[in-house]
Image (tube, rainbow, N blue to C red; front, side, top):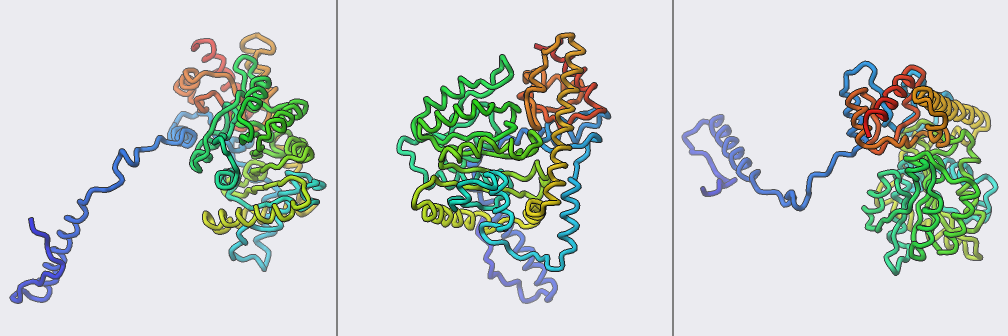
Length: 451
């Protein structure tokens, strides 16, 4: 069929209105014919991606109409009524911001809100950090911790020399997004042993040995505290040994810190590993999130810190690194969002608000500790085996690796409407005084009935 010319003129005997209708009709036909051109993005070029398992779990939970359903998948804090908790100190800071006559919606600088990044530096590196004192830290405000990990990965993919194509090493298991973020910037990934299925604790010897055997100059990603998904952290003595092997193999440490203050309730304690590595003179980077410890999940407040080693030209080195980070940030987001950073900055820089924040952190971490104790107590009461669920209280932070198999996880979801990730990870924040006994009974039943 010949193509219809866009310059076609209707016959002169048609009225003006009929001529217009004819022209439109012919244009529509022409448009429909053009719309049938095949796409270049065929299935073999762009295959259908699998649904994100965690967000898929959230959708399934929301669709479930069962009255006693329990959400143990979500990585966000809930109070004892299973409701999101806006920290009282965040409410206060929010009110101060709204009443500020100078508040505006102008762009932030590329590196973000300076009062926020400098306070974030001191929080994670320590107020008396030698790196801050020596001016060898570059800090950028990011799209929460995810954006910080991505910015660091992007920088390393472009500027870190890897002559033997050294990989990034993650713990096994790790936060699922780590693999995607580093793979997307074409960095190869490998893993080191971390969780022992037999002890349900840290496989320290496996971890240390794998890091020691990794090719010299590899990138080692470490969870600063409250390991996600296991809730298992190294002791301080073990951190010292980890630092020794990282130093001996000339590896580059990359810390991911999403739970400072939320893990133990103590900000300094949760930052100990990062600060120890800096005191040992390591060149490293840190991804820092303020989603969990401020409850600012949707505000996407985070920071990325690059710390260069102590040297006479350290200031010049960090200046060069900062200039390249600025180009990367500019090309991706131009500049970060302001509101969450403003709230966090107010709290971090005001002594009274900071003290109240520490109290709020103790409330959150304390409730999670209480739920750990309650779940363990109920489970051991049901099976009559003291110490059989000790790993629940040994682990720390928001998550616990229960040891349930995928088969048991799917069974408990089907029978009891309790939702958790397939690897048996549960969010302790999803438990409360109303559902912990129900959950314990369901776990006990599925362990007895399903291998």
